[in-house]
Structure formats: structure tokens, C-alpha cells
Length: 411
Image 1 (spheres, helix red, strand yellow):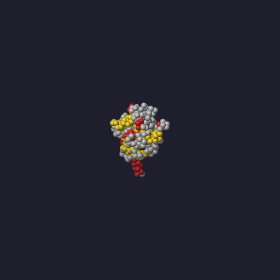
Image 2 (cartoon, rainbow, N blue to C red; image 1 turned 90 degrees about the vertical axis):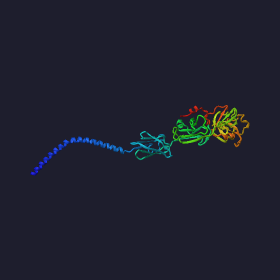
Image 3 (cartoon, rainbow, N blue to C red; image 1 turned 45 degrees about the horizontal axis):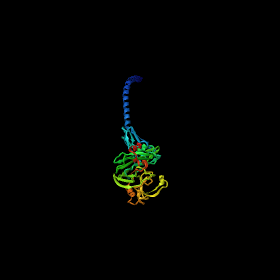
Image 4 (cartoon, rainbow, N blue to C red; image 1 turned 30 degrees about the horizontal axis):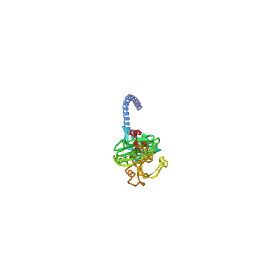
């Protein structure tokens, strides 16, 4: 019983102690909680900062490319762009399967790279981009092919040597409506340097020349950057190339049809003087500055091709050199009496020199003049009784003043 009693007292005391203890603890808890709340908040914020720092240090830069990786018919009229988030770009390289590369520039923050020109059509590109601190990534895309295309056929021929009057003339296979875009994509430079300007004669022809004849010995470079240039809606150029031409010695021949004489000057000095015969009163010869654009040791001439019916058909005209598209030549003549040259104008509009049938007699003026000439040589006709030749009729843009020539540029 005593044990029981002690035990009971002990239990009661225990219960009383426990309540006091609880009360005491409960009395401390609010302070502990406040204190704990303060300490717990700091710890939480610290944990968050630590976590954020950890996330920041572990987040990888994300690189994106436009056109997107895997695109098969990407537009070729816009530049390639590479951008990065959560980082900066270290390097970008864009290579085409044709061996070409696209150069580009970074923005100030180095978070974006833009190609300095557009990608070519019908080309597969590989983009290799590396952000700072991580491995390089690659993406590929293929540009679509254009629908219709055009090219420009140029005169003179590549690596050829011409006379000082030879313009750079380009004939396009499709009409050009955006002349400025096409002209901007073509450059003509000279060494020694001189200003060279383009002039549109039509929507399919663009010529380039300096103010005066080229200097003897000039090297001319034609740069064609027509690939993917839209000359007309939906019609794109295909060429991207450089072509070099050369200018030889200076030879300028002046035909005076009142005197019926041609004086040939080579590098400023008289080289030869020949008696000639020009167009008669019914078939006058064009006057003005003309450039030799074609040369034939022998050729056939038919009057029907120049609107003169069946007045003549000569199968073996010797030493013929074309001056106009419409059919004006300076050529040898074996069928007229030698006395005609220097005394009468009897032709259908051409300038004739005494020559021999077969084009092999070296002693006659026709042979001599032909042998001394080259494409691009200048032939000036005066006192013919005819108006000045249309500058577009052959390679004869020298008949335009420099101001009028420049007015024909689209730039």
C-alpha cells in the first residue's frame, strides 16, 4: 500500500512537474520561435541565394540558329543569325557545301552574330557555333533553289586584249526591272584607276566605260556578284565570278568621207593613210565614233539582211570589221576598180578599202588595215552626210557626253 501511495504521490508530483515544465517550456517557446523565426528566415534566404548561385553556375548557354537546324527549303534572301541566351558567343563559322563561307559580325554584347551577306540558293550550310565555356554545337540547313534565273553575257572575252574604245558590255538573258539591284551587283575597276560608270541601253543591256578612252595598257576587272540578285520578281541571277580584260596599244582611225581618206594613228602618231570609199548619196554612212566589235578575214554580205532587197550578195568579202549592229563595216573591196578609192563614195553604207579576192594579198590597204586592227579599236567617221550613229547601235556609247552617259546609270 505504501508503495502504492508513494507511487501515487510520485505520479502526481510527476504530473505537476510535467505541467510546470510544460508551462515553463511553453513560456520559452514564443521567444524561441521569434528568435527561431529570425534565424530561420536568414537561413532560408541564405539557402535561396546559395541555390540561385548554384543554378546560375550550372545553367548552360542555349544557342539558336536561324534558319533552324534541319530546314530544307530555307529562304536565301535573308542573313544567317546565331544567338545565345545565358551566355556569350565565342565563335561562329558558316560553311556551304560549295566551299563558300559566310563572314559575319557580333553585336556589342556578343550574344548575336549576323552574316554580312545572305546565303546562296540551293546550298547546304553547316553552322558551327561555340558559346564561352562550353563545347561547340552544329546545325545544318539547306536553302531552296530559285525558280527562274538569268545570266549576263559579257564583252570582251575573258583574258582578251582589246583596243582603247572597248566598253564592258553585258547582255542579260532576262529583262531586268530592278536595274539598281543588278547594277549594284556588278563592278568594273581599272588599273591604272579611273572612274567607270554603267549605262542602261535597255532592260537587257548594261555597258560600262570611263569618261574618255581607256589608257593603253590598262587592266580591267569585271566583278559579277549576280547570284541570287532578284533582277525581276521571282527571277534571280546565278553568276559570282571575276573576269579580267586587257587594253593594248591605242589605235584611232579617222575616216573623212569628204576627202575619202582614212588616217590611222597609233599611240598618237600617224601610222598609215588609206584612200577609201564610203556610202553613196542614197546609202550614206553613219557618222560618229564607232568601235570594232567583230572581225572576219572573209564573210558573206547579203543586202536582204540590211533591208536592201537583192541588191547584192557577196560570199567572200575580205577583211570585214563590224562597226554597227545594223550592218556597217569597214572592209576590203576587190570588185570595185582601184581608182574608186580616194575619189568616189559608191558603197551601200560601209567604208571600203582596196583589196584582193581571197584575202591573202599583203600589199593591199584592206589587208594592211585589217592586220593592224583589233577588237575595240576606234573608227571615227565624219563628213558622211549622215547623222550620228545611235549609241546603242553597236558598242558606240562614246557618242554620248559624260553627263548623258552617267544619267543612264541606275545608281
